[in-house]
Image (tube, rainbow, N blue to C red):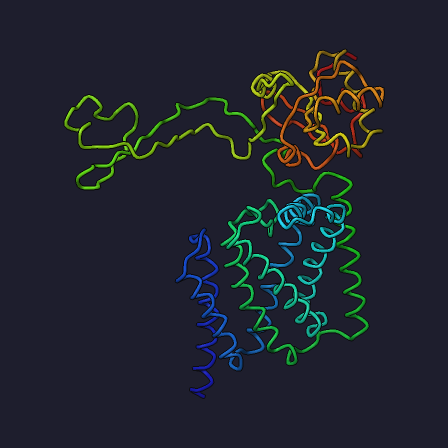
Length: 425
């Protein structure tokens, strides 16, 4: 009896250590040999003491992984284009740009796989098959994120979409913790009791696939149901009451090596003894007015930055976002051109932001017989893709605030705009 209690206690302690290490990940953004050894030690414990984990512990592991996979698949599935852009980053990093056209399809497959496996774990569907599939998936993820951690081919793998941003090392650590629970399930896959008949399991599996692919498709042909990015409706992209920017300088004593940081201009620059014994090390800027995710720079074709004049416009204005005119939906762009005429009639600004070169823009406007008066400006394509998941897309702004966004499949007509804006009817 005491032996059984000791075994259960040991098993729970090992699981609690895994939970605690998951919490610690937030504190280790970069490589740490001691934390890495702790995570590897946990994996060794999962194998060494595999016989002491009870059915309840195995079921808890299934639920934990199921919820985690569902969350990860959901935040990526709600924004399949975001996942496709991440996949494209990997293609560029690995020199396989020829695979770019497959990015969207691979995004659908990856997101659906996570969602389906999460549901199958949570509801204990086909436990043996699910265990093998999860091991295979996590093996690929772990090796990929290990390479990301050491070589940094992409700054963010997008494991949790835009909902949760982690460093590459944190992502790798996270996968090691996940592998702890994967091992518990995999090593006991033959002992997990089934809940359903085989036909019911296949029906549920097929149902999960259909539901989750349909869910992604709805988010693909529309804007994401949930927007985790900075440019979501309601966000303010400018600071209304800017605070003073602070400048700090660090100096080091040439004799003792002591370093001191000073807030400019409060440092003893007029003290000859201080000047003789202290040397400049570095400077940093503390700008409290930085808006997270506001990387937009609107550049005219003369090279001038006109971001402030358009972003801080107190009137309603439209941003047409077309990150690449070569890939934009031409028919929808013609509808936007009609809306431009309507905006001009009612004294609203409408500008187009694109990364396309000036000569290509002129050719595009002439070829498609669009309005010659619409103003085009250059902006970074990555920022434009972040602003709206549509090419083209339409964003209504007022005084730096995102009022509304439209996918090119659901562009507003005059009546829709009249309901939002103060226009003369």
